[in-house]
Image (cartoon, rainbow over all chains, first blue to last red; front, side, top):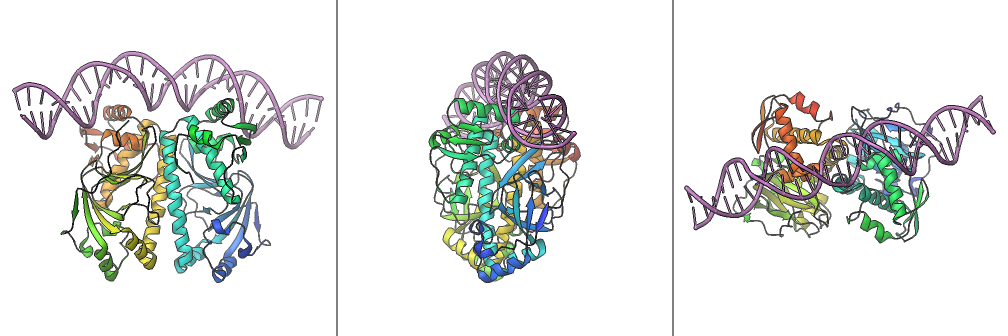
Length: 253
Length: 253
DNA sequence: GCCCCGCCTTGATCCAGGTCAACGCAGCAT
DNA sequence: ATGCTGCGTTGACCTGGATCAAGGCGGGGC
């Protein structure tokens, strides 16, 4: 059971930092990746950067969201709170991922910054108009949405059929791969994985309790599948051991 | 544990039944709902009807699918089989729903006919070309994909956080609503719900075992939330009782 | 008719993971 | 330094749903 965070304005709307889209480090992962310079020019005109502190709400459930945005830095979660306080995280958002539900002003899920986060936010009506008018944007959104749908379904397999142990391993693999993708590097044995979130967020993402998460981490440490550095950092001694312990699924995300 | 069905050709490819798209009863729910007559004309030229018997595979996991299709009649399931035989159904497909993964020739999930089913199948390369060239098609696919993504995430909440009892109630509500949508009718107390699938399919959809499904149905019958007619038919005496027992979530599908 | 065979239900038992509770530990304010 | 607070860990115990096992029941073939 947790207290619902108050909806709030971002801790800072960053008007100065109007970086050029062409220099944007995460553009290739974002909805604007197929845009040409003119299209980027237009998007630049309607974008605003928003910064969030860890735990800060980005969009509340059912809120009429005035903007859609792309994660630029940090990690955010997308979750649903049941009336009695149970929570399920239905997605993690990494740089490049879209925040908000296109073509529907009220989001059926709440978005919360997990780490320090930075959003490239677009005015919703203008962005939706741009989507309609710009095939390169609309097509890219379709690609991203189809990929997210595959990912969501993979996660359904984890939630419905995997053991706590397997869930943890799959999660570590996911966290590692998402980080690698941004750095355009390949998984290697012995690599460091940063866990961007608290035990509670992991539990809510995996359909477990914090105690079970904690115990499974201890068990995996003891069995040598992971090497724990501190609560937020671990090493993967053997990638294939990790995947074996993860229930033999295929690529997640 | 179940035996993997053999991939197979549909039991019948129905070349005669080239019904006119304009008369198609489920077109408004399908990917072609925004198409004009010319566009429908083109789709007609590349479509074939395929009929499947209950249990018959439509597309195997990892198979290079030669077609994409729209469910015309019946119900199909989309599922993932883990190496050790555990299965998770990640979606049910009703008339209007798209079968197959656009822009990716190998589907990461298997599709199986649950009831007698009929598919309007399009040659994949031609259909994908049509998607690229036809904004009304592409836009509609985007809408549908965004909706499916919301549904998948709602289902993640069910899988991760709901009790067996709540899962059953949510499932009955889903089955009822999907049927009502096709008939363009509204939910009413006392209405009949047809369960299109076996206990095993329900269990695999809900992340439960058949025994638990069976027991929960008995319990819900005893508590009066449902009235059982036979194994595949039930009544909903009070819609609000059902939703209360379903864990207070919002609209599914 | 009768026997199978697939489903479904029900009962008995088990156990993975939830719940409740205590404690450790780091960061921070006083 | 002290104590507080938020997070994480660990232990003891409990329970919801899984597992194992036995029947029930209806439809189809002979």
